[in-house]
Amino acid sequence: MNEQLIARLRGIVGNTQVLDQGDLTAYELDWRKRSRGKALAVVRPGSTAEVAEVVKACAAAGVSIVPQGGNTGLAVGSVPDESGTQVVLSLSRMNAVRGIDPANLTMTVEAGCVLQTLQDAAEQAGFLFPLSLAAEGSCTIGGNLATNAGGTQVLRYGNARELCLGVEVVTAQGEVWEGTSGLRKDNTGYDLRDLLVGSEGTLGIITAATMKLYPLPAAQLTAWAAVPSLEHAVQLLGLAHKQLGAGLTGFEVMGRFALSLVTKHFPQQRVPFVDADNDTPWCVLLENSDSESEEHARARFEALLEQAFELGCATDAVVAENIAQARALWHVRESIPMAQAEEGLNIKHDISVAVSRIPEFVSETDALLRKEIAGVRLVNFGHLGDGNLHYNVQAPEGGDARRFLEEQEERVNTLVYDQVERFGGSFSAEHGIGSLKVHKLQKHKSPVALGMMRAIKQALDPKGTLNPGRVLGDIAS
Image (cartoon, rainbow, N blue to C red):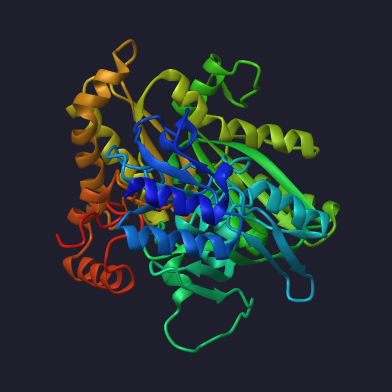
């Protein structure tokens, strides 16, 4: 049966686009190197029609499909299990920009288009596509939509869902829904686009999308500020909202220990206000994008910082003088996950809490973890502007990081997620559920919501062909 299916798949996409021999690590190992599966085959279709035929062939053979974009996800949602019975459907060949509509401010792209390629194409056409995250050089827009990716500019532009006007999708039955019209108003029944965005490939396979574009800003300013506490960071955020309005496009917070890992593992980078002579506990990275002249925008930006100094919610600040300096500041922020990886295996969290409650959440949860686990180190950073923290936990200094992960991960997760629930937050803000957090979804999502989700999955994918075991796990549970 497997031989017949593989022969059929080769007939659909071509012999060289079906991989079932050799080193398939790039498709079978998740980005964090925590899970390694085994695929029956990796299939790389070149068109939506081929995707549809592949899905039909797999459905007829009773073989499940794992859709995969850039394989940069953090929740083990795009690699096969260890059974050797699943087909990985890689969309990497479907990477074309189908078109840009300047008057409609939209771009239609195929799912395998790398995010940075999309950004560059938009800029070359004189527009901004604002979705931005650390993996933008390798993640794809299909994966971004499948997980409803966030990133650093959600504060102004929203998650991937808010940036998407329509999708083209192959269903579990191999039918194609063409929904890329780019309409901003379409009130004709249930919003299938919003249902499929964020579904992690469990309800349909996104093959193309129409995304919003924005005018390029006339001025873009970046500042790095030292703040004495998270309470002061929240106060500074309020000032920035008031003074900059919609021009405030980024507001990131970084704890001292998180930044110290960057200085330790990437000493070539200059990290402001984090050195032996400075005990700044928190730093904030602000970005202001403005349609006005740079001179006017800079004056407003500097006035904001002066007010912050007067109120005591910032103690020092540097403003980038040019694009190179701004990129260097952002590079420091984006280097935190890499520095943490260099420090050793760690327990990652992607949580969201109302901005107003973040200082209290961090204070209480820090104290709880330090009480329960002696010597634990907390790597806290993230998108304070939209309430999303990467509240990560590192093993005690000098300890065995792998052993710490094996022995403490479930305990740490329980402590953190119970706190998140107590504060009315979410344990998954932008990374998705994948297979890593299925049991946490069962615990923290309401039974009513879970029942509705299972009904949707059962209706759209009754045979469980698409990305089984992800998000809901066993839909019969």
